Length: 70
Image (cartoon, helix red, strand yellow):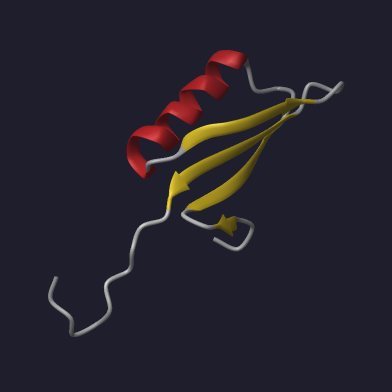
């Protein structure tokens, strides 16, 4: 993820929703991110033009090292 941020045990991902996206569509899209990728809502900013900037976060997953059985 090139536009994400990692802080401690959490990784964050910004998501920009254009003004044409309805509230129901935005909620559905965020629910899909939560269900299938483990993201949760961290912060939402609503701009005067109707654009939403959403920050999603999830716990970082440990990457097993090759050759090590856990």
